[in-house]
Length: 147
Image (cartoon, rainbow, N blue to C red; front, top):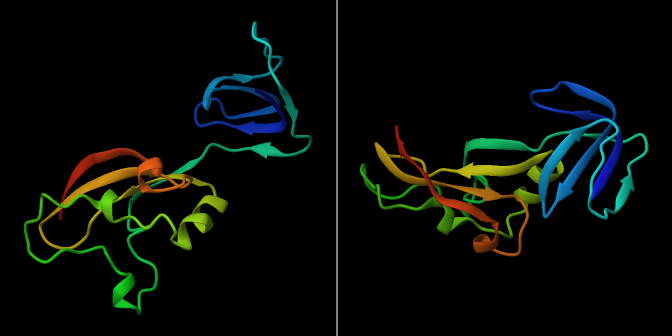
C-alpha cells in the first residue's frame, strides 16, 4: 500500500512534507517523496492528514490494572520478594477499557511489566490491537525486572 500524506513525521529523517510511505504486509518498506515501486500497489491519499510513528510505552501496567480503587482489577503484583517466574503477558486483560484509549492516543505497543518485590518477573511486549492476549503478544519474555 502506498500512503500519501501532507506530512510524515519520522524518528530519524525529521518531517517529510508531501510524503509517501510504502507498507507491505504490515511492514514499512520506504518513506520519502516521489517513491516508486515495482509491485502493483493500492494508493491511499490521506489528503491533509499527517502520519506519526507509533509510540511504545515502556514498563507499564496497562492491561494488568483497570480501576485503582477495585482490588479485583489489580493484577500487577505477586506475593513475595523474589518472583522471577512471573510472566506479565499472561495476566493482560485484552478487554481492558484502557487499551483502546492508549491506542487512540498513539501507543501501538507497550512493555507490560510486573510490579512489587525485588525480582518481579518478566515483562512482555504487546500490541494495543488484537483479538486476544496471544494475538497481541509480540515477545512474551522481553526482560527480567529487578527493582
